[in-house]
Image (cartoon, rainbow, N blue to C red; front, side, top):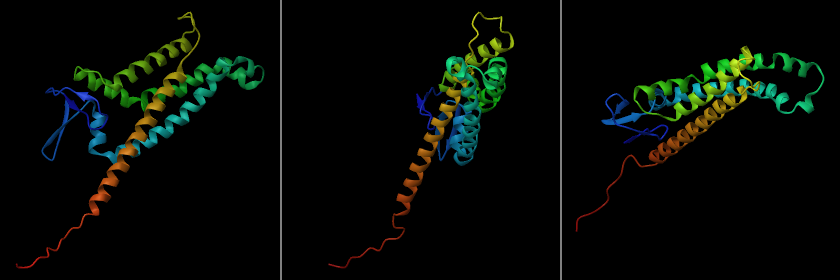
Amino acid sequence: MAKDPVCGMFVEEKPDVIRYNKDGREYYFCSKQCLDEFIQPEKELKKLKKYVAISIALTIPIVIFSLPHMFPAQFSGGLFPMAVKHYGNYIMLALATPLQFWIGWRFYRGLWDGIKAKASNMDTLIAIGTSAAYLYSAIVTIAPGYFPFKSVYFESAAIIITLILIGRLLETRTKEKASDAVRKLLDLQPRMTKVMGGRR
């Protein structure tokens, strides 16, 4: 069993698994996303920062619109509660859709890579869990009478995706700082030495 150098997951060394050869050493990856982060870490870090910012910007209003359903006593009366009551689910659906399928597309890629390799990875769990919450909530919003329950879970899927991305961003930045520290230590090594000695 090989270990993914990016996410740390164990990968079976199968012929169809994602691999990359660098400096004569073969590395195995659980998904193409991990391969991209390994080959182009700076580019992927920049992209991840952008996705985290967009994900937070979409998640905050989703959570706000879900609050009146959890605390109805504090939000009685007024224009905002009426808008939330009649259009809240549709607004959350509109905000959650790009978050689920654009920002969260990396998890679907990881899921597909796992299916091709006949193995599961972390992306498999995230993609299935958030998709179940999103699809159920979308059906309840579009066809309210299809299920006996009326609660939606857009905020659950959004928060999971956002927290996972924040975690990956922090992990990537920590690895980058560690790599920079190692490079600085290597730069401290003297490039030339003078051998001093004499005849006995």
